[in-house]
Image (cartoon, rainbow, N blue to C red; front, side, top):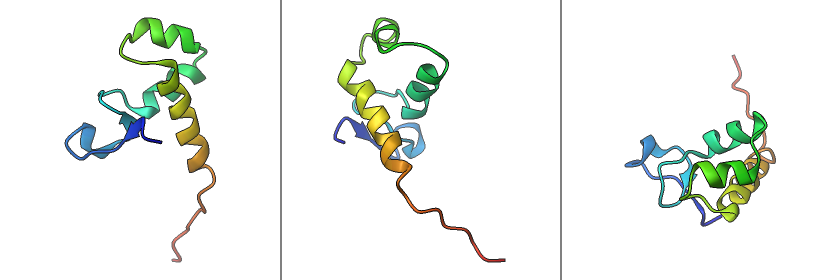
Length: 72
């Protein structure tokens, strides 16, 4: 997922589209709100379709992580 990066000097390490300050979370929120990929590319010209697909792939990969619950 080289289109997604997480750097401490960019938004405190939140995962972003590489080379931008666009958080993966914001891309996903726009899509969840009903915006299309074409809407996002038009609104944010520095995003490419591949960037948006990488955000979706990143989110999908996170759902495959085990849930760890701390014992009390």
